[in-house]
Length: 85
Image 1 (cartoon, rainbow, N blue to C red):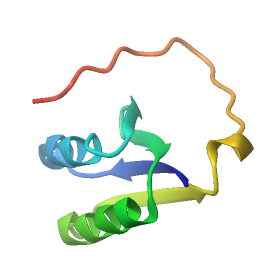
Image 2 (image 1 turned 180 degrees about the vertical axis):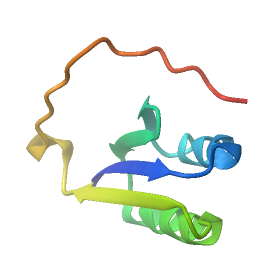
Image 3 (image 1 turned 30 degrees about the horizontal axis):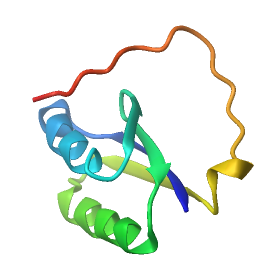
Image 4 (image 1 turned 90 degrees about the vertical axis):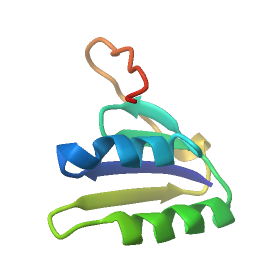
């Protein structure tokens, strides 16, 4: 399956969610990860996110059967995103 995960969390905790999601997905741009994963990987991600979230956080997971049905239109210059340590 292909997933896109977008999130809005407190800046003090961005590094932690980035480091976790990088284990499974490609960091597309600030607060956006995407990639092919298995059902068991998705379950691990969902459990971790449920435990990680605080009251004002928001995470959305878009799930598609495959990337083949995803169409994207991009505008602007892509940023080189470096690992946040």
